[in-house]
Image (cartoon, rainbow, N blue to C red; front, top):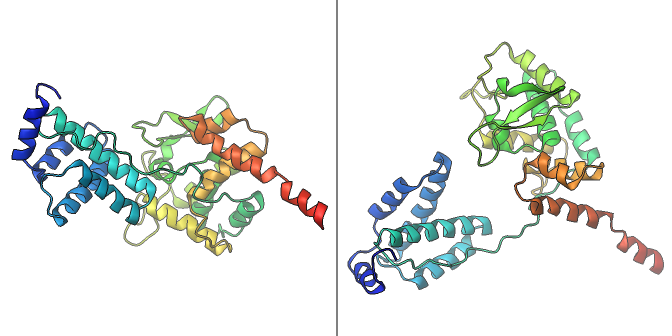
Length: 311
């Protein structure tokens, strides 16, 4: 506990409760990207609001456990996990600074299901969706290019949102798009642009008109943000609207379904596990293994064999 004995720390804990000032000091201490800092700030704001509502100024370990159970009842497991992680780091910092006992040490968050929460699309379905988009106007060409790019490159909405015109470059004999991936600070990775995808992007850019390389690859067409960079939410909405317009209105189909579709179709069409990991930019191959599990299950004909034997 640094230079403090347990007894001294207990005395400090009795003298000083958890205050908003301590939360602010911790937020200022965090060495991370603005997005990371904002994530911790939001998570800890939720925690201090809960403490205040319960009238708790000197929380004990039992209070952290009670907070976790409240989170489990009202939030998704991933949110619960993120919020408890923030609380754990906060109390670890407090103990490091000699300000409070680490009452959150080894408290677990929520058990996360590693299975996909959203469905992938079949080859026929993605063709149907793309063919349903009218590309006579600029917005249609934009939406077609976004969907085609996302489903062939397995892009996340944040990667689509961060892309600039100048990120389209050459690598070897390929036209590629350099991307800033999840948790990355620079555009060090790229995806290849198949000829039909490159053609769709260039058709959109031509319709949009001349623009500098630093401009967003995809821009908004709304009155409030016309020509500005799309947000991740607006990208998700436009992809979802294209699904619905083609007749695929399901809670299990979202923008992230295009990423799942990319991984699934690559494996189904002869791609190796390692190639799929590289395509989707998974740091851990176990994440990619989930796709393999789904494909193996889809190929399993057990039900048909049993039905054939019975009927």
